[in-house]
Image (cartoon, rainbow over all chains, first blue to last red; front, side, top):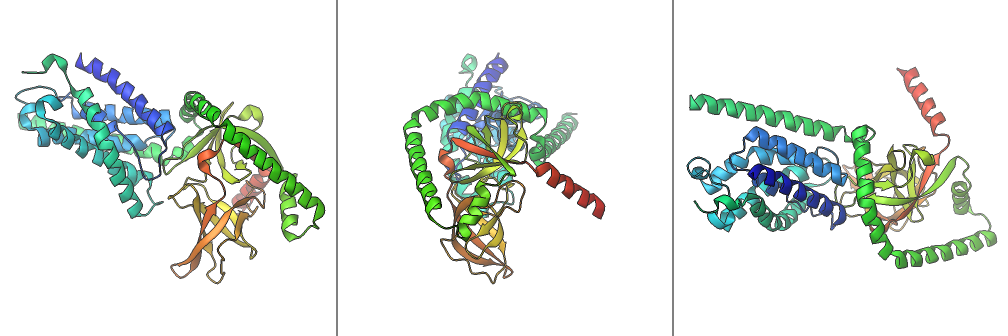
Length: 174
Length: 278
């Protein structure tokens, strides 16, 4: 059930991401993204190989819908999917994956932890995305400014989205 | 046993990661040539369909501004026509007449359906395609200057790379001195570019007009692109000059596709020359 709901929400958020990338061209120094939140919101015990496959497909779909060079978002999203379980283990503790077997929720585990996990994945995504996007064409300071501005906007935006994708109403309190 | 399973999982994850990253980077690396394959054509069609409607709606609210700019353009053209009638043909006018009367080029008006502006690899989709006689490697211009180059053509739409894309380089001629220099986007703002590879002994004055040189088979000579700003020496061996573009990429709606009618012959000549050398 969680998987079906996740896929539906995931598809909606990918479309929303495509709309933002297409319609909101703010400046060269800003990339607004919440794709990493989609990766964080996967069922907690999802196998890494499947997570990476979903990340690859989600990135490809986003690039396809917004006319970006195909493979750009996928190349940045797959590393985020690779480190997802490690990030969850680091931020939320090992028991969430092994002992309690519950899904992530900002209400249960706290907004601080959720923000930290979202920030880590978003920053990894942005670092890879910006580095590949501007490879050999822009100076490092421009990438650094873009990274800082994009992270400052994307992380607060990703937080409620990650929580929406993570929250499992059926097992809210165990 | 669990440790063995753990290491197997780690190896599988690492293998999947490498495979997917290589696949993504390979797609990305060949994205400029891939623009002509079916997947990208499908992407182009989907983008034109999805975002064309939104762009049209947005343009509807810009009509007043568009009308004003068209009226201003009309007035400027009338003034220029009168100027041409009255003035003797000087050197500058002569070069411009070459552009206006150049029978080697065909001009096809088109409307921008979609335009990417926020990334390092920006593009434009226009509402003219094979059915309208558009071919790859045609230029895209407006009355304000150069917009980009068509890179893939579908049945009804064409996909082009804008000047705001590092893969686009335009051959230009700077100012009165007539120095030729390749111009490309600096990756910073939508209204600045850089002309490089200028011999260091040339002194480029700020405010000189930069025009297309006509050396490539894509654009006719004499299309104004922008004005020069600061210049500097690079590695002591060449000079680089900042160029402020006339074209405002944030408000492009109507463009003109420029097709060189002799491009097939030129390309065939180049191909023969290359194969003859090897």
